[in-house]
Amino acid sequence: MTDTAVETPADPIHAFIAQAIAEHPVVLFMKGTPDAPRCGFSSLAVQILDHVGVEFVGVDVLQDDGLRDGIKTFTDWPTIPQLYVKGEFVGGSDIVREMFQAGELQALMAEKGVPTGQA
Image (cartoon, rainbow, N blue to C red; front, side):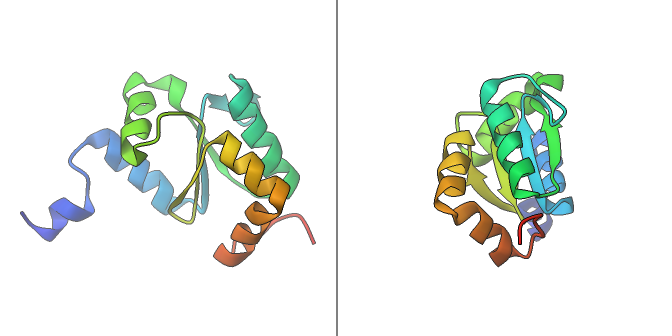
C-alpha cells in the first residue's frame, strides 16, 4: 500500500466528496439545492447558514444514488443533510440547529476563519 492510496479514496464517490470538502470552506450535502431544498431538514440547515451569513456550496445528493449512499458511508453518518466546515464534519440539521441556538456554530465559523455576515 502506498501513501497515494491513503490520500485518494479508491471509491470514486468518496473521492468526489473528499475533493468537494477540500475545495470549499463550507459544504452542505443536502437533498435539493440551496435555492430549492427538497426536504425539511435540508431547508432548515440552509436557513441557518443563510441567517449566519455563511457562503456555502450545496451538493444535491438526489442527483446520484451513489452519492446519496456514499455520503452516508464517507462519514458513517446515516442522515442527510451533512455539513462540513474547513474539511471537518460538523453534523446534520439537528446538530447544526443546536449549535446555532447555543452560539456554537457562529463560534466554529470564527474559529475556522470562515467569514459570516454577522458582526
